[in-house]
Length: 78
Image (cartoon, rainbow, N blue to C red; front, top):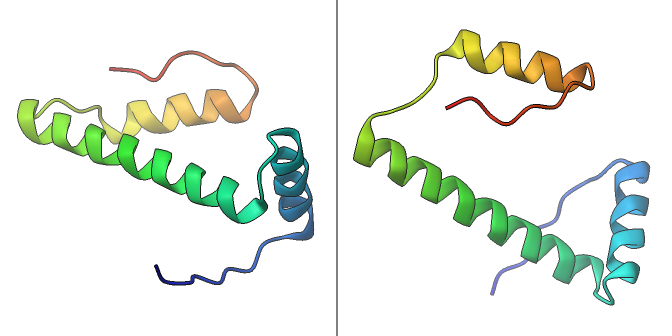
């Protein structure tokens, strides 16, 4: 296993510390789990796109992200 060093804003590190304590984990363990989950999900998304060729336009994605930024949640467009 290799080591990866990253710099995080103080607020982010504090949030990670809080989550780690709540889940009875270390920050390192929590970050490892989060990165593995993200990687698995992203790989699955890419595989699905390669299998089907189905995606969404840049404009639709941007509009959806803008709504999220404004606090209006809706599922990711398909």
